Image (cartoon, rainbow, N blue to C red; front, side, top):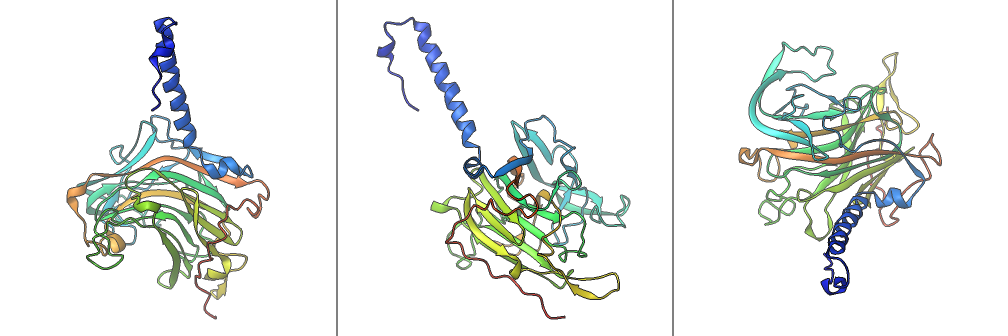
Length: 358
């Protein structure tokens, strides 16, 4: 912090000195607030902000978010029950905190959208957490989706910022698609990137698409990314984003473009009304409305099976912290979303999967 020379103030009333000091701190605060603004959207005025949550209210805005409540395990043998309790998700000093706790909990055994969902059909799991979604409150086709977040750390942690289809036009998961803006597992645990005893800590984040046919005939393609200079995503807030337009999705961290996937590298095949398996067209499945999800899973078929393996229960509680969520529309072409791309020409298209012949 720049120090003001007191000698310059000798001819003045002593109160002027304190006024200057006060102004110095006020202006510093304004500068820090401006730093939260995305450089991309500030410089590229083709993006128009259409939906946001800055988490400045005392309570989570239920006009924008719904809580999923279940002990389903995410379909991945995850070990948390998702609750609607304010001990698992709350706002504190302008930050949404999703907190995973080590505690036995009993709740519905099926996921919320299952037609057989029943509060009396229960399951008990050893952790609790929260999963928020914008379904039917924020649903979009194409745009820039930008989230400022600080991630949890430790073996068994699995935070995710992602998107699912609202209407499931092309059948069950993953035929109708899934867009993972950011996932990370076991940050700061022993990395297994270069072998089981590499001596490095886990620091990778992942941007992925899931598509193909309904499970178990689904496929995925994605890319991992590491922040420069050995920075770990669990140490501070970083901006995770995608830009999604007709036939193309791009991934960013702190406005650095690190991955691109295009429609020739994804597909969907689904049953039509006559029961015939057919190919999706026009960029399917990523040509429909999707909604946002924010969640913090524990363990499961990814986190518990890599790095140091299992779940380190001594690290809990842990928090996924969200500073803001912002959604932008490309006003140059609101139908296709094209024309507002933030591109690094050195980033090659990721080769995904082509549809098998029917």
